[in-house]
Image 1 (cartoon, rainbow, N blue to C red):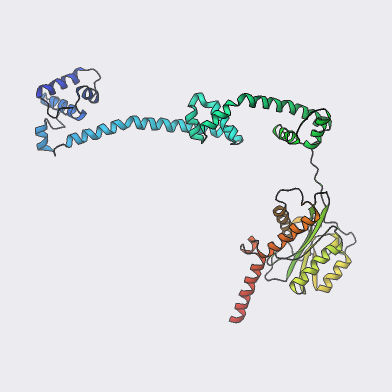
Image 2: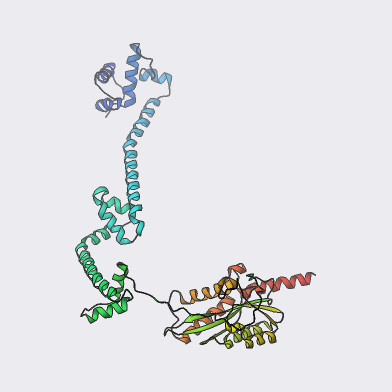
Length: 421
């Protein structure tokens, strides 16, 4: 236990020891003597002041100290300094840790530029384990150490699998080249099986993806806009303005194809109201004759209770320019407008709203699938989407209200204005 009161002889010896030791520090000598750093410093400064070397900055003794400052103030200051000095190693360790983590993250940023898959993380730890240590690496990049060691223990098995995949890739490339790069995984699998290999098509597809071996994919383009050369030119009354101030004034229509699993198609004709983008009429069939678009327009007339004094906008398709269709428009009181943009046929911008509608329909009903399956499934799927589109699907052009809700709100406002007038 350290003494609370020290003799003058002890103090003098302590000062002499401090001043005679080259490179001595208050902290080091005080630790050797078992006294506080502040006490030793006070004794040294008092001795130097008595010799006239420098003025005393601290109390000369504990007795005079009590007269000049509150009791224990010097000890409190010394204790505070001691605590701060003890924190220095902790702060240095923290700084070193942060520096290490920064270096790890910088390397990881470059390493994971091609993708942050779990396997990439395992490999990153393995590549830098000697530099930073497995524990620190796993902590920084959020990886379980046990999982890493399990992955590492399977290195030989993994290497054997990679070698087998590389050998298979060479065989796949040979077949791929023999058929001018047109074969995909199903046909390549069949060729390899004919050569006597027992192999799964999924593995062939996986290796082809891994080694970027791609077969030719021919997507069948379906032409839905077939112009009628003998048709009488009709002016464009929309001029790419697909908006309307109220329901029942402007409509637009188009035909799109719906792919089936057997390679055939169904065709959908729609009539959209420009005010709310509501689908007021549609027709679904396995043909693109004039009846297809006529049925859609007839449904629109029934939905709206008539189409008198309205404008209908479509593309150059022969269905829309046929004489029978023009006669139907006249009977329904529709002014027909066929798009003619810069004199070119099939300019999608001139019927952009319908193009966008059909793109949304197929994106949301197919959800990445290449086709709808059979015709019955296609009809059910499209029918459900069209009805929900009108009643429940929120539309950005309507302030995220459904078309039916948007028209209802418009009607309520119109009634209010009428009553107010």
